[in-house]
Amino acid sequence: MSKTSKNLPPWLNEYKDSFKNELLSHGYLLSGENGIGKKDFVNELTKSILCTESNNLFEACGQCNSCKLFFGKSSPDYHYVEEESGSNIIKIGQLRGNKQKKDAFEGIVDKIYETPLVSSSKVFIINNAHLMNDESQNFLLKILEEPPSKTFIFLLSSSPYLLKKTLLSRLSHIQFKFPRYVELQDYYESQGLIIKDEDFELLKGSNLSELSEKNLNKARENWQEFTSELTELTSYKEIEKLVSKWDNELIQEKLIWLSRIIINSFASKLKIETNSIRFKIDSLENKTLIELAEIFKTIQEILIDLNSGVRLNNKVQLKSLLVSLN
Image (cartoon, rainbow, N blue to C red):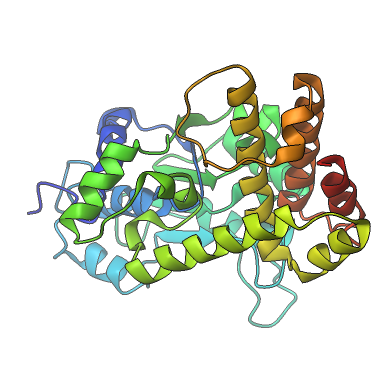
């Protein structure tokens, strides 16, 4: 029987102590940056909860019928929900199910109150839980108010602040911190990959456990292109041209990078040492701390809208944001 979770990167091991077999809560929220390994972590935990031969968390045997069904993605006691393809919202139908539609997803309601079929417990995972609309969150809250026995619900989120406070109050919250540079450096060196100091911020949002030299180089190229574009924003026409190139996936990455540039400008003005991205926009040097705070606030508001599934109105907010940098 496995004594360790070999599939987990080292920076996740410290969070194992937050889970005790006899003290497991019915509802958990695991939050942290995209790519940090929340899904890998909860999968290792889930395997051990469902394993019929192990009494220890994170030590699934890998040989019992339950483990084999889990590996084969056919366990009747494991249920996974996330936003549908092309959607930025987890709708109530995904939780409640729609029996009127042929071949529709059954939802978790009927399953959550059923007796486990193979294991002694059932596990439900909701990925990107912050994408649940109000109706979905209220629906889940009712389940958590009177949770079925031997049923465990895990919510994964990179934006937990978008969840209702009433829902958060029903969950045990485990916050995964981004690993320190030294941890990442040692880990990747053991994998034969060398990272540089300036790569640290670029790794945030990347899938850390699957980082390769190819996608690291791609991130470096994207960063170089982004900084070059920012230095060329000398007119509104240039701003419109730049914004038109950004699709929805790129917008979030660019905004996160821009927010880190703003943080770096804060640190520079306050003479604070930081490991943040080493890039300066000359025009920001003349901004006051209050003006920088307003720019940062605007970035966060746009990110919240994007994470909530709100579509930008002809990217007007982005254009206004980039104008404010000058």
